[in-house]
Image (tube, rainbow, N blue to C red):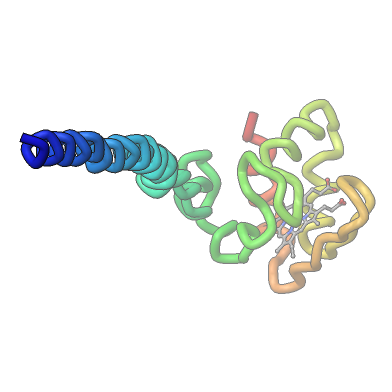
Length: 152
Ligand code: HEC
């Protein structure tokens, strides 16, 4: 009789340890739950980079296209004016449309600009002077000045 009571008491002692494996598994669950938010952040931060690559700025129109669209003669391309002058934007030289605007009411404009195209010079638009174009004769330079002044 006495031996039976001792064995029952021993079985009760084993039952007291069984919750331990469950506690370990439960402690692992919070650690596993941190993974999905981290993966979501990585996906979100990758999205702007993909957008930037997919939408680059469009390239500006070539000077030849710009000049043709503005109705300027081919001689301004052949003489290299486009190296410093855009039609609408400032580069090394002023935009040709701005030149037309500045001289719109000046009766001396064609003479002044013809002289400047051939001989170069500065002081009107800023400190940078325009190079001379001694290869152009008076009639060629005058035709260029007249064409530029038709821009509006
Ligand atoms: C190396 C650069 C360069 C090239 C090439 C060039 N220009 Fe210029 N151009 C300038 C600069 C700089 C000015 C501003 C000069 C100033 O402030 O007086 C200018 C000014 C002008 C002006 C305005 C002048 C004034 O007094 O308001 C006209 C018109 C002009 N350029 C026409 C031409 C033509 C036509 C050609 C081609 C034959 C040409 N440019 C080539 C740099 C250049």
